[in-house]
Length: 255
Image 1 (cartoon, helix red, strand yellow):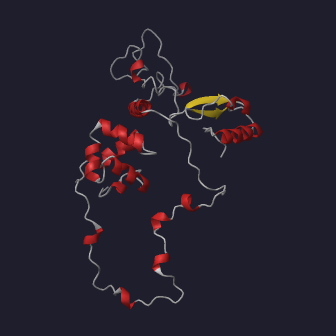
Image 2 (cartoon, rainbow, N blue to C red):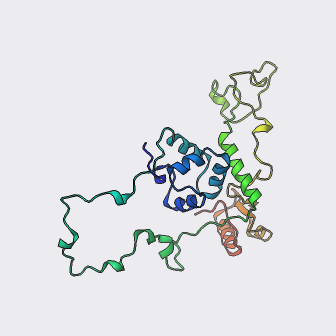
Image 3 (cartoon, helix red, strand yellow):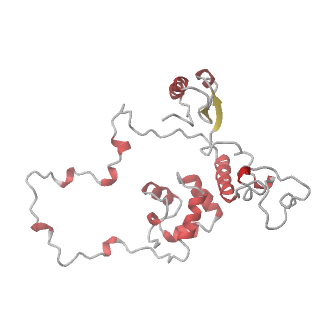
């Protein structure tokens, strides 16, 4: 794959270009330089929405062996010789003047939706986090991307065991003794930062609720609710309506 601009990278959209420009990344050369810095990678994960450690690893793979020279701008492209001049084209009688036409970049459904439209996209609530917590969440995301998949002893030999983690047992267990060429064992060194432990990926602290009355003590700035799995549809609707009134984010909404 030939990467000539930032939009050629996996997961990069138009909305990310402005966020990357604020970080000082304006072309492929800047991106390749930023991927070599661990601090810059954490800053990108914190800033770019929908971008995580796995996407960053894809960028590193795509930029391996790629010439960092930026593609030539479009103004150097010369028009074809056989192309007819624009003055020969006769405009239609009913055609509106070009000044009334809106540029394509302004045609965003979120901006032109009328007030009160139920189908309009509503941005999900974000928690109020300090810089230390944002840094801890970004660091946790990096550690989670490198953490191996822990599987129980001899999961590959007997299908009935499944892949759920179970501590290896037995005095002759080589996995328990952590010998070479054995699967990794869960140890404390694989854990993430203490401050970000147990938080939702968005940064909210999850609170399990079963009825609308339990929403009264929730802080919408730092906490979000998760409706219990045994709650019925009627009570779920009541909880979601009440949460919308209080400005509380529901992590597992029905729609």
